[in-house]
Length: 241
Image (cartoon, rainbow, N blue to C red; front, side):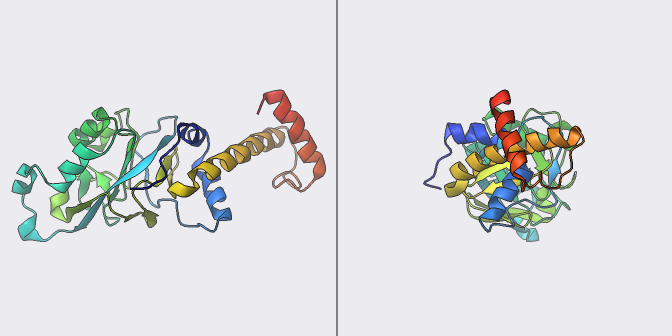
């Protein structure tokens, strides 16, 4: 686990910024592959999912190890992960980018929600996706998938470094998802990235208002004309931003 716990004030900031803005802030720091690819929200929640990562890793299933009887084992890693994911954390699953078989279904995700999970992400698919979409917990996947995970995947490791949609995810990294996509922020960068993203968002909101009013983007976005920075300073005062 990380020795950089998520501060409440950092969480509050990350709840107010877009994944796209966060991606630019991380790009400035040389991190270009932190967005989880080919994963989308089951339903739009109108709020950001924010929390430290708690991970589950799947590997290719070997048939003799993956019969339905495995689910009777109380220590089955998939079930155990659902029952041990700490409240406020986002459960992130490495499903090998395969939605051939499901990573979980609505009963398990409901249990995760009832235990206080902040969200759930897989680069595979969920079964009963139409029911998960109606839950309050934010959920992200590649596409609906009906076959049980035992068909092709074996849950093998809990809370270890994983890859999810080509993004590296370490336990305790800060996962942020909006109604578009998801990004993984290295835990030690969360505070500074959140603060910078808040600043970037203020300017982006100003710039969008200017464009909606008919202004050109040249010299405005990015701000290469001093007059636009002066206008922005006035806008910030007026809008208490």
